[in-house]
Image 1 (cartoon, rainbow, N blue to C red):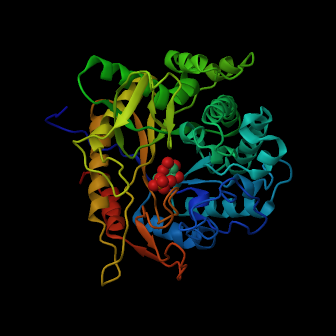
Image 2: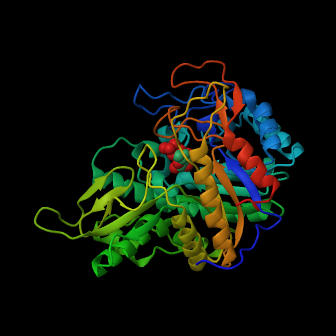
Image 3: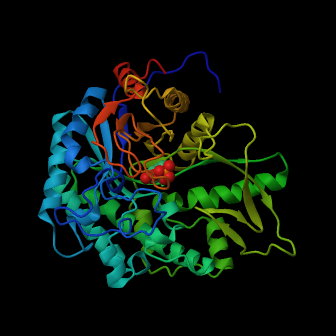
Length: 471
Ligand code: BGP
């Protein structure tokens, strides 16, 4: 809604930026780090792997100095689980601990609040080999032991924690669970078993954080696209509700309310995919709630009804990243009202405003945007600077959406751009850049990995300096 006045950003708003370990650190085989599922991933050879990435492991002091110059109040990064526990459990690798201690100390000295993701896609390959990873309940204990170790070791300085990045995507991506593609139904079933174990593990991590970290706050970091019914046909509106429950709310409903929402439960039971729930699992979730909702937002999608017929039966699904078409439920269709990135991600800042309100209405927990950013192909101009006006436009519109959501009462902790420096994109290597800072390398040519500030760096610096009054 438009209002005559708009409230300013609060003084303690966490102006942040984010990365993830496997996408920026490099040093994939250095100082005792063990292998993760991302290291062993078989991928398109035209895309770079994660061995060097942005070489943040060796450039972290320079990177933190740039964050300080930008004025960041918070930096979200992830700990590579296998830098601390190379096998996922068992012996600790002290050099890994030393690295994160040094990074955290550097941030604190720069006046930047660390926000730490415990697990961002890079599951230890050792646990896959020992017992099949998240498909086995032993995974819960190993995740909790790792989390407790981090709380005890870093919790004197790290007060904001995130349990699992985009669990709602991981469970649909076989290789991130250490599975081969195989039979789609079996893979889906395995994914929802993993999902249950992750929710139990997250509840135990919420509990442990509250017990071990003085003033600690912890939450999930899901992906949350805005969804729209494509038309005012009632069947499209119903398909939209189903899609919201099945794509967006299902993990958070377990994390916050300790329940499988009705649509999700019926969906799983109908397909013989309901995981075994042990006595105490749901009570544990209900008794241990997160302190905030962390979510990544990039785009919106349009949903229309997709009825069954003689060709499309219940259970027929088309899997891409997530099922984009499920017979008897919904299908994702192009939104003619929005422009998109080069990768087809539909740009929708108003969608973010709606998401913030939906999340606040359903959970009444403060929000932390853990990722929001614009991926693009980029080359520096003749003066060596990347003039990324499209990114500035994208980020400022999305920040205005946050401001407008706060204006009608949505509680917020802060906002992180994705990403601080260029990192390896999850699906498109170094050809798709997100950073406020350019890293001088190409897909396969490493060059000197030097850092240079893009135009968006200066824009974000000014935005933080004005505490968002320019938005
Ligand atoms: C999120 C992930 C990030 C990052 C981002 C952009 O899903 O949490 O790790 O990859 O998406 O995605 P992509 O790199 O595929 O453009």
